Image (cartoon, rainbow, N blue to C red; front, side):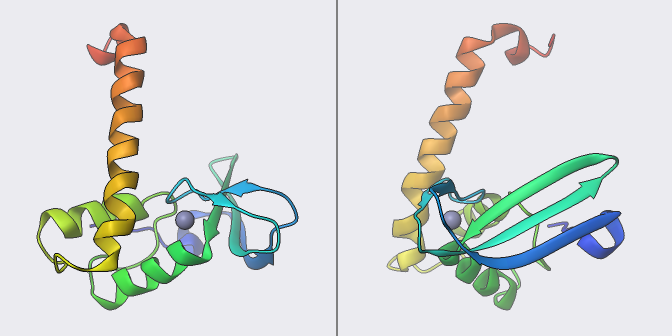
Length: 129
Ligand SMILES: [Zn+2]
């Protein structure tokens, strides 16, 4: 799987560990990050456009594990779910691994959302929009 190196791709970026002061949504798992919880905040400029990603501490751990297991070479913000999904699909994850319990419902939820989008925009579904 490809990954990006923020240092070469972004003309400017910052990445810092923060404590949430208000509710936020994790860019990876889509779960809520509650006030008082630590998260990783990334923002960077790529081709004159700002990109912002908030990553909850659980996803940050899963990222590190995915890199340790060489499921991916690095971080792709917004790409953790794909990495985990591929690892599960390729049976790189043991059946009783807590990772499966955590990610399976999240992956199903995302697939349902994508399905919904396709239904609500039929032109997009056949590639006209
Ligand atoms: Zn998360």
